Length: 104
Image (tube, rainbow, N blue to C red; front, side):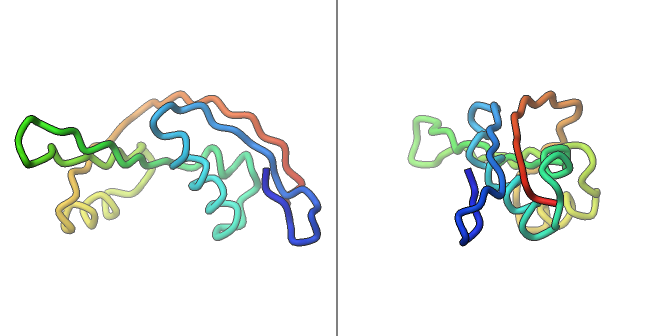
């Protein structure tokens, strides 16, 4: 639940995406706050997910991948790769969400 300083309701939402759930909560909120999207548009916006680093039995962990949903420009993918991120494009994600909002 997100409220204004006056304690009036801004939005109440939940995302069911397992590992990505906390990342997606933040992405929806940031889309609403920074990009002035309503809650439905914020949910429908392309997503990214920073995958976990997985131990491989040595001192080095397998590098995590950044999963980028189809709809984010190729320029963004290339920029992330230029910073040595392991980027993987993901298509056709199905996401379940529930939202109520007074945000316009």
